[in-house]
Image (cartoon, rainbow, N blue to C red; front, side, top):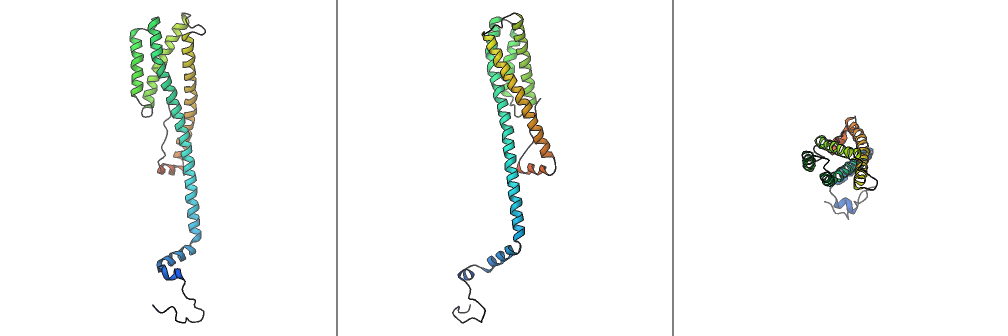
Length: 204
């Protein structure tokens, strides 16, 4: 390397500090970037658009998951009321021992069958619970035991409120789940599956 203090030809500037310190490949890379700057800007815009789309999809998934959790909450509340119904039914003798045992057995099975993994199987059990409760309170009504401000009326109001919420949540969740699933199966939005997004299973 020549002496930098040696006079340079006319029109040639001495190298700067960075030109002396940085290796040549760095300057080659900078030159390449300057030549293809539009391609880099386009790639950056595409990456940002994908990021915004994925973040938006994650928010949608979180909202649907919240509907699922609310459904589980109200199902668990109804399960918590079964022991009270069993105690009242035993006292009034309106349900035979076999039906009461069946109700408690169904409740135990509901606790063992995860709603997330087996929604159809779980809903079949919940349907059997509804049938038993409907029969029980129908018999109470026929006997005139559902009087204003009685325990029976309070229990019925609670169960009706829970069932009403479950029906609302079912409709809202299913509508959101179907829209989500259809969106994931269309072109070009199916690419979201590469980011770990999966179908939601509707329940009837």
